[in-house]
Length: 401
Image 1 (cartoon, rainbow, N blue to C red):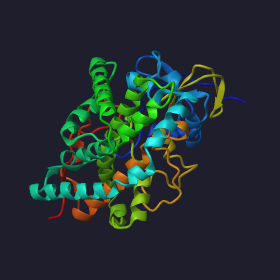
Image 2: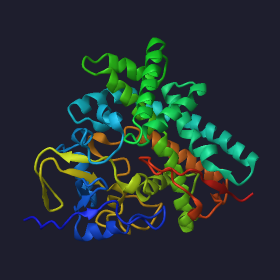
Image 3: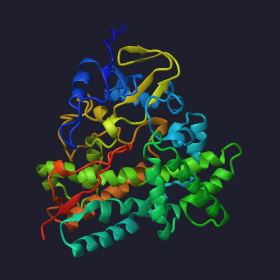
Image 4: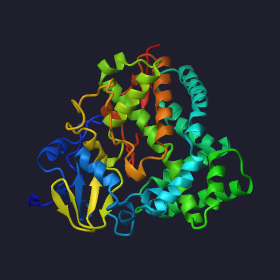
C-alpha cells in the first residue's frame, strides 16, 4: 500500500547552520516522508531519497539509471559531456566493460606503491609550512598540491605540466551550463595529453589505461578522454576538500581530536571512514542523480518510469537506523557502512587512493603541527560558487609553536 504524495517541497532544503552540520530538514524527512517529491530551482520535479536503505538501493538497483540522468533533460546541471561519456554516466553492460578495463590498470598495488612517496611529499610540504610560520593557507601549502601531485604521479604527468592539468580539472568540475566552452577546451587538452602518451608510453597509469583501452574493439576515443579526465579531476578535487573539511570538523570536536592517535594506522583508517561519513562534501549533500527506467517502489512510494531521483548521501550517512548516534562524530566507530564513496557499479574507482592520501595527510598534519586549527572564525571562510564539490577559497591555519 502506497502513501499519498503531498505537494513537492522546494529544493535546496534549509541550509545547514554550519559547515560541519547538515540541513535540519533531512532528519524530519527521514522520519516522516523519506522519499518526498521536490521542486528544483528550474521547476523540475524529482524525488529525494533520504534513508540509507533507499539511497543504497538507488545506487545498486539497475532500474535507477545514470545514463538516463546524464542526457539533455538531466534533473540537475552537473558535469556536461564528462558525465555522459565517462564511467559517471554510463550504465551496465557498457559501464561494466569500461570499468573492467580501468580496473586492469588502476590496481591496488599501484596505489599502495605510492604511500611512501606521499609520506615524503607531506614531510616536505609541512617543512615549508613550518618555515613560513603561522598563519598559513593550508590549501596553498598542502590540501591542493598534494592530491594533484599524487594523481599526476600515478598518471605519469610531468611536474611542469601539473599546473595546467589542475586548471583543466578545475574547469571540468565548474558549471558546464554557465560556460560550456571552457570545460570542452579542457577535454580537448586532455585528448592531446593522451595522444602524446600513446606515442611515448611509460610505466604509469595513463599508459596502462591507453594500452588496455586500445586492445578493446568497441571503446571510443571520446570515452577514453572522458574516463581519463574524470579520474584526474576526481582524483584531486574531492580529496582536497575532504582534507579541509576534516580539519574543520575535528576543530569543532576537540574531544575526538584529543583521543585520535595519528601514529596508529588502524585508528587513522577508522577516523577517515568516520569523517567521510560525517562531512557534507557535495553541494546539498547529493551524489549524482538517477532516472528510473521503469516503475519502481522506493520508500513506500511507487515511482513512475522516467522519474528523477536525487540520492541524499549526507542524509543516508546520518540515518539512525544504521548508525548509532548518527549526529555525533565518533572516530572509534567500527561498523561504518557509509556511502561517502557511493555503492554498486558506480562506487568511486579512486576510493582506495583517496583513503590512502587522507590517512597519510591527516596523520602527518596532526603529528607535525600540534594544536593545528583554523586561524580565523569559521564565519569568515568562503566556499567557491558553482562547483560540484564544496570547495573553500582559503583555509588559514595556525598551530602551537
